[in-house]
Length: 436
Image 1 (spheres, rainbow, N blue to C red):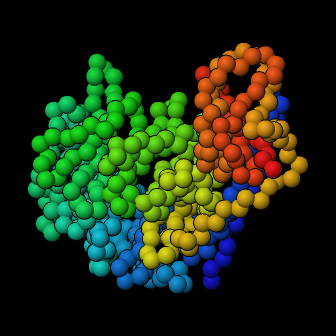
Image 2: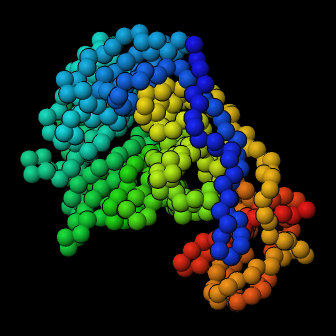
Image 3: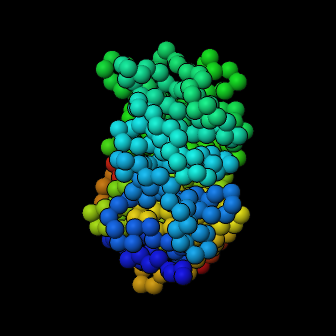
């Protein structure tokens, strides 16, 4: 029997913080979408899930505490167990396109391969690896390698019939390789690789044309580190999480247009009204939508939501936290979180609720302009968003003086509630106003 997985987080609660200058900083308004729980792998037992994925026959393969399980997709009951690892550790699972092979990282960053029909472990690698991905036809496995004296190299290619290494790819200006993913057409690999310059380490997002592996294209170079890497289903975009300890954001790169988009923790903090401490790895729901989690760990606030990359805004909140995996079959999204909750979500359930909150303070908007009272002199940039975070208008830069400042709105706005954001070199403040 499916039950509703209810969290303590009230995602529709509007959080308001009164700023020193008298404005109101508010969380964006959106609709909470509950998920239907299919199974709870842990059932109260301590442990961690690795993810859940549809098999071609409609059953579900889930990973709990290092053991792969096959679940009935209607009842959630365990149909059978695959061989368990002696170490009891497995993570970052990948299924071959035909569902017959399962690959995971195991203890000491090594790798194991299961034959799913028989449930047997058919190969273990006794050297350290980075990450891996299947070719779209499942014939090859691309595996990245760290910088180890006993195993130098950046990328190995494994034949999935013989389970033997058939090729090794190296680039002289790189030191190691880590995250990896492949386009749906199998032509291009994206790799997070590293290099060392004057005792300082850098991460690079590189693209490898698999028809000519002699050279690689460097897209981005940053100080460590990229935490994840994934192609969109149409192969046109790459999503990654970047966190160097001081700055955290989601990075989106369009291969065709070369456009780069950023979803920054600081900007999300402005929309939510509290500091965003953590952002989870972005996962594509479709080619225009990613799913990721944000949290304020000291206050135990967690929000998991979908973000529309075309409109550049939050679409809806998803009622499942600590999510590990997303898989899609027809219109059904399969989710699995770290605690072992396996759940369903309707892919088309993305409404937005624009109902206004009560008892909130607003700036006065008259004659296509706003009045802003400042206690300091500064130069700032102004912009207008709607309450879900969609950018409506960039108002440009202006000099602010002590006292009354007029901010002109350079377009006619439809009736509704909007956010005025003023950015300076040191901070970002947001205030609500109403157009009637």
